[in-house]
Length: 217
Image 1 (cartoon, one colour):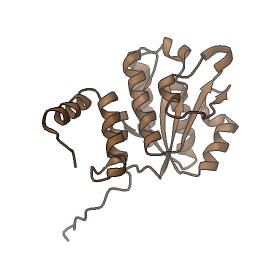
Image 2 (cartoon, one colour):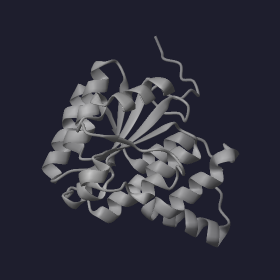
Image 3 (cartoon, rainbow, N blue to C red):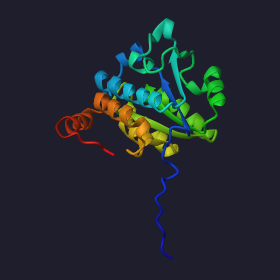
Image 4 (spheres, helix red, strand yellow):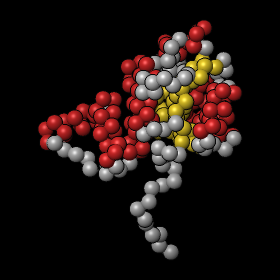
């Protein structure tokens, strides 16, 4: 029997209203030992994800570990898009074992979680596997995560994928939230974020607009 196609998005695609973004331990001390990705690229990708979430009004949790005693402040690229938002500081390496974070997750009430942070093999694997076991859907922004080595990062991503997590990139996250260039209310903010943080794609958007007045819609 033939299958009939319909112009309907797949159920696993993210929308601004169906998930919470959790940004974990983007802190100075954690970044010093991160070698799977260079600091400039990491900060750029974290900024892209944070600004995408803020632009689309995605509920976002910002959490740190031992901020005052060990790990230091969170990247301003992550905190600036959420002015005045409190950071949830933890003692546990596994975010999912922190009562304040879990309380916030339950208050928001979304069954899909998007994770990004440092380090992939500890502070991302922990909540990913824990939340999956409790029935949540997990997405990981792999290029907005980092670890002490490429080996550690890659094995962590494999472990999470094997358990059911879905990997994606920060730019993919932004464009998946926009999905349709006819969505005029977020068009300018999306292309603006892409131009600033979207690498060569952003340069292409700037070029097309400057040279030809091009418009994706």
